[in-house]
Length: 302
Image 1 (cartoon, rainbow, N blue to C red):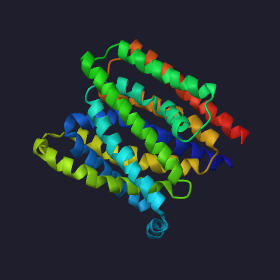
Image 2: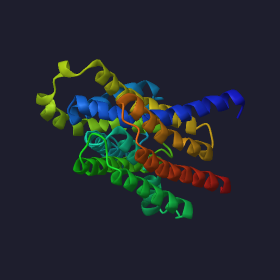
Image 3: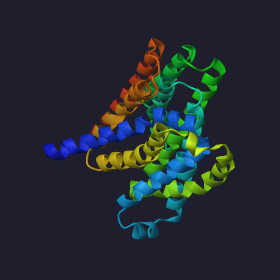
Image 4: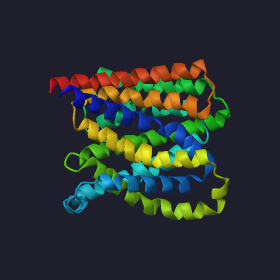
């Protein structure tokens, strides 16, 4: 790989993970400005519209999908789009952005655990240690309390965000299965489109509580980025990057996501800097680095 191409690939990987990380603070802004299912419906609609131009010969690609492919895409729509969006927005209503960032940072460890449980991946001490660090980091966040939320809300919100993490893990693993022979951008587009009927009746139900005139410009911008940036652009950047490099290199960029989530929580939400939050984040981030190290080691052995 020559230097210019390498630089371009690394930029895509880094920016893709940064876009995914921005979902944490941005979702809190959206959840505070509009009903959850209205915001979720708008997010996947925007995401599908932005992804559409990046599809390569979509008619031929869709015609080639098998029944198994459609089943996996449907599951991604249920968990990765519907479940993730709703749980994330409801959860981020209850917790500070830095707490949400810490919980979301457990995604690599949760994905590794799910891969061992459901896909038969071999347990290693690095994977198990990463899972333990993820659990420990979240416990530190809970024991440290919160800013702006009661204790009960903190626990509930963290549980909802963690459920969103589980949905994200399902999205990753199901996407891995179907993307072995299907364009990942097509998978993301179809999953977003298929989730719209799930969101639509609930969004209509909540429309009575939605007053567009009360939504300020910052919230509209956050909603636009939540769909176009975290769903569409992030997917395109990440998958266009990993197709150009080794898995071990791509795995090293996983650490960008939690850093992006934490930094943007301070910048966009104005959350107060608390040492206990940083301590919990550092513990979780150590698990992210372990997972990345394990990916690199496994790729080197292949």
